[in-house]
Structure formats: structure tokens, C-alpha cells
Length: 356
Image 1 (cartoon, rainbow, N blue to C red):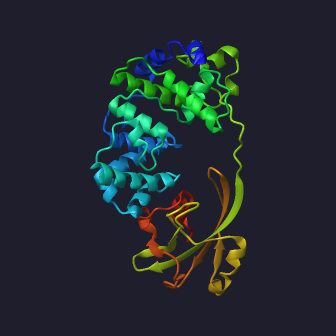
Image 2: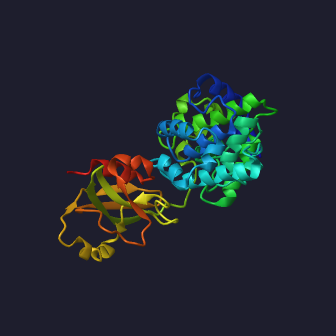
Image 3: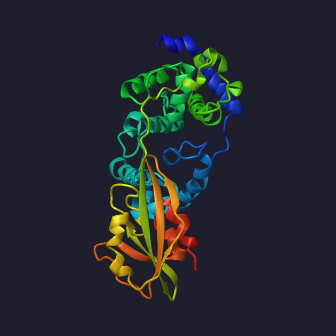
């Protein structure tokens, strides 16, 4: 740990002072030691900006004020409320985790990071955040932002796309923790790591001139900040074209569309969506389209972590509730009640704005 001693003497005290003076303090999940609220915020904030999470966090607490209400809710209700937030496996794991806390722990979240990590959807960094914020446990988070901060601080050139260097950086993070911290110190330290990575030590154009630990940062002192973190494995993105067949019909209560539940695995797993086809598969639908007018709507480009989707919506008005595929897990849904089902983000935006 000589690199830690050399490059980060005084790191923890400086970070704690800065967070208390200049860090973020007005977020709705701050100032609480309720594990349920901290856990909910941590899951929502994974790969999602704070500005996006704010509204969802409040709505979730209104609908599910505690872990018991979330555990007892139908999965469809949870997915509907999550709709638009993305990374939907988080919502499925959120529900599973709540049920595990109720069934296995009597509705009380475990207090240690080690025990928290055994729950569905809670990884090492999330477990550390909950334990530090709620119980003052002396343990460091190491999410993506923190890896960037510490890689630069320590000029750590281990490849962060590989397991062994990730483990080494995790060990360094634990060595940087404040000595004999109070619970309040651990809150400030943990929040400080988050704030530093989010507001100053950004991936591009980091604000080194505003950094509270600039004098300790080995990468800054060497003028090599942009080199870190090292990550040689490149993200391979697949490009796919999907056709969305939007069956719409009128009813006494208003216009409605046919939605089918997506498979349990894969893109948009468990959500409701219009029937999806590849170009070749769409051709098999031509008999059902005979005599109907098909409106080709503007394509939509939708980016996912590993894929780039080009969506081609096709709007078809049918004269009545035409029978759909009897094997499909689907239903007709009124356009003014779409908020009651879990929809992928592109559909959440597209369907309320259908022409005519």
C-alpha cells in the first residue's frame, strides 16, 4: 500500500471537510438513516443521473412508503412505476430484494455490508453505501465514479476491465478510509466520494482547479489525469432494427392499443410492448394486415448499454378488438391509462403522441 501512503496522505480528512462545506446536502435521501430509503436511492442512482431520479424517488415513496408495501405489491405495479427509468433489471431485483427482506429478515435490512450483499440486486458498493450511511460502518464504496477518482488520485494503472485490478483498487479504497471515524464522518466521507466523482472528477474535462485533493492527486501532479482510469476492453455495440406493430382501435372509453408482455429475459424483459418483429418476421404478419392501412411513423433510435436499436413504428387502426395471437401475454390498454403498465422508454414517449 505504499502508493496509498505516498499519494493520498490526508485524503480522508480533506474529503470530509470539503463535503461538509461544499458537497451536496439537499437531496431527499440525505439526512436519513432509514436503510429502505437509502437502498431505494442507491438502486435508482445506478447509471442514472440525480436529476432523473428525483421524481421517481418521490413517486416510489408515495406508492411504497416502506419495504413491506413494496414487497406486497404486484410486480406489474412496480414495473409500471419504474417505467422510463431504464435498466429494468434493477426494478425486478428491487422487488425481489424487498420480498427477501420481509420473508428472511422480518422486514429489517441487515446492518452490515457483508450481510446486505447477500440480498438480490445489492452489490458490494451498494452494500457499502447502505452500511456506511445508515450504520456508520467503516467501509468504502467503489462504484464507477469512485474508481475514476481513486485511479487518478493514486495513478493506478491496473486495467479496470479485469477482475484482479478491480480487487486491488477495492483494497486501496479500504486503506484510504478515515481512521476511527464517527458515524457522521462516514456519512460525509461516503457522500464526499460520490460528490467528487459526480461534480468535479468527471470523465472528460475534470475540474482539477476546484478539487479539494488536488495537491494529493498523483495523476494531476504528473499531468496525466486523462489517462485514468485504464480500461482496455472496449464496449462492443450491436446495431439492430426492430419493427413495432402498433394495433390501435377505438372503444367507448377512448382509443386503445394492444400491448404484449416481453419475455422474462432479454431487452425490456417483463415490460409491456407492442408486438416486435424483425424485417423477415414482419412479412409473416401480412395476411393479418390485408385490407388495413399501415402508417409508417418516423423511426426512433434508442441506445442501450450494449445495443443500438433502430425502431420502425407501424400504426394500424383496426375496426374492432381484433383477436390477437392467442399465445401472447397481452391486453388492450387505453391510451390515457398507459401509466398503469410498465413500458419501455421509447414507447412511453411514442404512444401518447400517435397521429390521428
